[in-house]
Amino acid sequence: MDLAELRLARTFATELYRAKLQTQYAGRIQRDPLARVGLRPWHRDPYPLYETVRARGPVSPGRFPGTFASATHAVCKDVLRSREWGTSAREQPGRSSGEFDLSLLELNPPDHTRLRRVAAPAFTPRRMASYEPSIEKQVHTYLDSAARQGRFDLQRTLAAPLPIMVISELLGIPDADSDTFMRYGTALGKALDGIGSMRHAHQAFGAKQALEQMFTRLLAEREADPRDDLLTMLAGEKGSGIRPEEMLPLCQLLLVAGFETTVNLIGNAVHQLMRHPEQWRMLADDPSLAPRVVEETLRYDPPVQFTSRVALQDNEIGGHPFRSGEWLITVIGGANRDPEAFARPDEFDITRTDGSDHLAFSAGVHYCVGAPLARLEAEVALRVLAERMPGLRLAGRVPMRTSRVIRGVRRLPLTA
Image 1 (cartoon, rainbow, N blue to C red):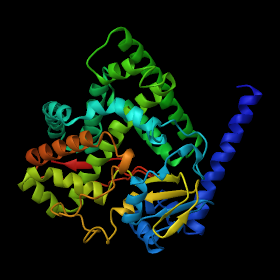
Image 2 (spheres, rainbow, N blue to C red; image 1 turned 60 degrees about the vertical axis):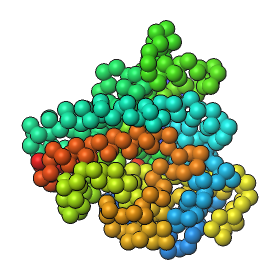
Image 3 (spheres, one colour; image 1 turned 90 degrees about the horizontal axis):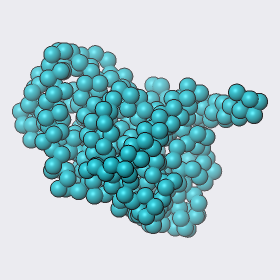
Image 4 (cartoon, one colour; image 1 turned 135 degrees about the vertical axis):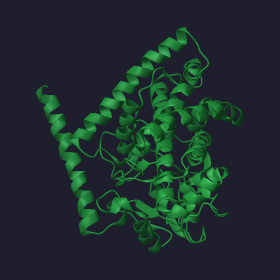
């Protein structure tokens, strides 16, 4: 490493640890609720912190100049659906250096519309129906292994390998290694909070580099030898629907977002069912309730807790005037428990009838393109799990991820 690289590394480390200290100070000394979300011990149950945000009003000031926050359902929904608001994480105040190009997540129309149109055909209802038999077959294979173990970690045995297998087959990635991809997803998903340490920086940039190398090779292969997969579709759009510089970021996003959300959706669903035995018994007695479990988990304990929007023009939301360029953090985890939108919001109830208006997959033009696939995978996994293991129960402590944006269990020890 030469002198210039050493100076760059020192600058990066200084900025990194300054941001970390600022978060600690804001959370522990200033008692800022959103700064506390990723800190121990509040990361285990951040939902009371969101109530604090909501109690401050429909819109409240954020930690940084020009930023605001809302945990009110009506405000968050309006902002996420409004064309007067957009997204560009690169410009958001308080973000540490080392962010990643997240393609669709950082674009506004018309570029967002153009790229979404390329990816959308892979997630049509007809395609979803064709995936279900192979997903169910794979779930049975994973649960065969779990049954032989007796005591198993749901994340390692089912919740992670299933969506990694599905999105890998959809894209056309041969011989996908679930442990490796899970490690990549954790590193890159946590980077949505910003880089947390030099070790995290090394892991995240290593994951990004490895994925870029893999996709560069696979896209070149698909250009020479087209197949029936999404990578071939993307390769065919290069230079027309997709600019060359957009290709790798889009592939990376489709892979990581394609399994990271679903891993945590399945894990959070089973975790809440184990914490609420009466709800698990209802599902075990009637596995057809699996879709309701999925929707209630998306409302009650969603995998994505926050997103942000920037005002593209002067406007007013929730009675608060915004100037162009100001930011609003939409606290999805809090909006989904707003008592103005949901009855008994802090109760996990798989029979509720008012839970469909949750914001777990965002709303408007940025509504998650892969939402139908995530729902399908989780529904099949929960249904088969209830059919085969009605006596399932927790078998140890459940450590939670410490990231703010992505919420999920790190391990979920169970016994059948």
